[in-house]
Image 1 (cartoon, one colour):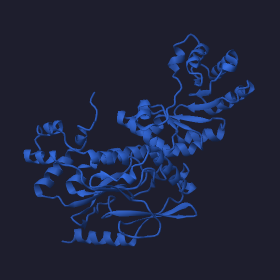
Image 2 (cartoon, rainbow, N blue to C red; image 1 turned 135 degrees about the vertical axis):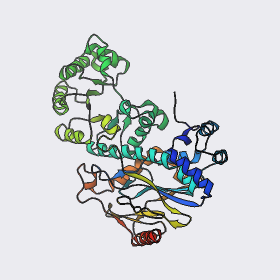
Image 3 (cartoon, helix red, strand yellow; image 1 turned 45 degrees about the vertical axis):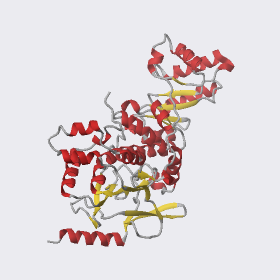
Image 4 (cartoon, rainbow, N blue to C red; image 1 turned 30 degrees about the vertical axis):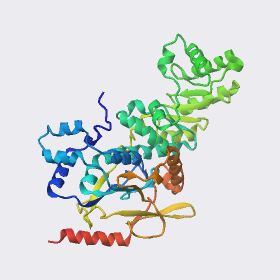
Length: 449
């Protein structure tokens, strides 16, 4: 199998990153640069983004190097001199990274992270940082909406099989967990990240037996505390078979619940709850899955409050309604001078930045995007995460600590932002007067004849 690993990840980049590095090296452009990773504006379907992916970004920077195998490949290409490749062999990231902690809600133009390093070091990081932070922020933001719609009911990640590749399948489980998803069906994610695992059975197991009841007997004998999938043939008859099994086993019946995976889930949940209660099985939970997203979950919570939990797959796993962000990684400073773009619709703010979040009575009311050395009212969000190419020990956090941070930060948002409909008004992000003046000054310098 061909996998991305430590020995080849440096080549997981766009060709122009390497041709620019060659040009920087040839011209001696090695002064300190600042690059900012941000989203220009939110998709219409999002009231906020949930920052995610920093852990992989920092690990990449700490371990960045071009292996002998990678260099042997590059030498076969017609773009690079041997002298440059010898220089590239010794390239290491020795810079700093400032970022918001994972699990922090953010808005348009606010940096998720900023890289401060020599120009070549900061440049070569672009493709990988965007790849990882973009994807993980996309799916964490979607999962946050799903969890909100469930109103405290557990949500389980069922998305692996339709995810866009192995890396996405693994990283999404972590992002979902940060956003509040309770468990995953992804066994590798359980091993790598310690995320709780959950799962039931597939229809194929039922089909492999002569009868649905026999399948229930066999599976519950092996896994007594299981949840039984009841919709392979006829959902209500499946529920009746669960009741028959309970009578067969008596005190030995330990099945925890049933899973509904098709049909009118609200109607079936209501009817299933009635017959289970009448059979004295009120303790059995009802778990729903099958093409769910936050809007369908919100409907089910309203119409069938007897549903106790949800399994969510494809629509969360690929963030079907907003699968991409207008994310950019742009140079904002080089050799001590602010840098910017003035292209229509793609203007950027120069220099390093800080975000001040102003809160009143336990609720976020306003963000101010400022220069990094300003001191303004509010809570500063950007923190130094890496220095000298090494992650700062004070910012090495467990996954559970990151998850708890996300829960706290989301709770501080106004309720209109946590709702599924577009927020009216949207959250306000202001640019400080000092940063605006600096932008004007840099713009006048770069447009001067």
